[in-house]
Image (spheres, one colour):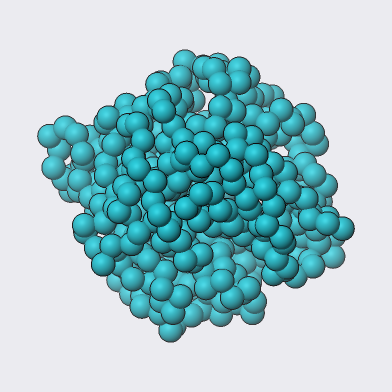
Length: 499
């Protein structure tokens, strides 16, 4: 059975179109390195200077990570300048990055994932950062970290962090069947306490904490790579507090690379998208379990959609976003061979799956102009120039990073929502925002994690098609439900929780 998006889906708008603005980067940026950087290559999108335009921090692998400051004209071509990051040796070996306000001071900080000890950078305003890893007592070990997720539990001053680790490089019998354990790190006084170990680990490549059942109890989902665990492993789900693996749901084994979530059916429950070598897997959330989407849903993206390479695709970063603002979430999937795997497609273009009025998805990557053949890894689908259309940044392995500007004509209206509440958790991670606009009903959760080795801290973006008005309400992280309030289409509205 196919799922219908929303209550009364809007008609299809113009075909998506992007132009390549990669020349707007000050220098070419390449995610490079040997086998330890076959995976990773994430990018973080976040505003660190208060101008409402997201900066981009791209992992570099063996090269240094790079922070690009957004200098785009509103609605114009995408242009960036390079920032002077702290001169730290640890800025090499970076596999991914996630923005998060760890100390709730109003400045976004950065969690950097590394081949080697991970790093926390404290934001100091105006896109300046300092190493706060020791100040915040982050437990560190020489692991190969490829996944991250975070949330706030109760009234804790600091967040709970999850670091997902890949292959244990020190195992002499590896790399196959040598998956490392992963770590859940909860706050302690003035920082973080000892790690709780997730064992056995199944070579985690992405992690996401979500209130999957809308019960007020967030759970941790890990996507794991069967290539190295070979047998016995599976996608994992954990009760977060206390940490306990769930065994009461149907386990799935795949070559897990990335995770994305979004309510696609209008019932308020988040679906889950998992990328893989071969078929990508969308599962519908039925509250008491997850149901695989049928092939006819159009989300498997299992073969290159252009070119003559008929071998299976390899999916990495997945991200939902309404590209044409028609009120239906579309789906971008970064794709590319791990390196030289002969059983998988070598010419493997990225996918842009546009959601149709009946809830199915149709491939539009070539039509949109983004079907390049590089080995893509991490990505960010965010509005980079403030025109209300979602743009695209893609990090490639052994090829320059790409920046794509959304120039789709005839797009619908949009609403941006940013949340604020008193400390801790000033950005209200774990909140849900519900929107009503005409016949459209949408819900989005504010999370940190997912994708592949990179995430964004930007306003939630809702397309509203031709609706002239919209209203939203917020279900705050503690379950308190706000009142419905009108918001103005075509702008970002900051909703502050009453003291």
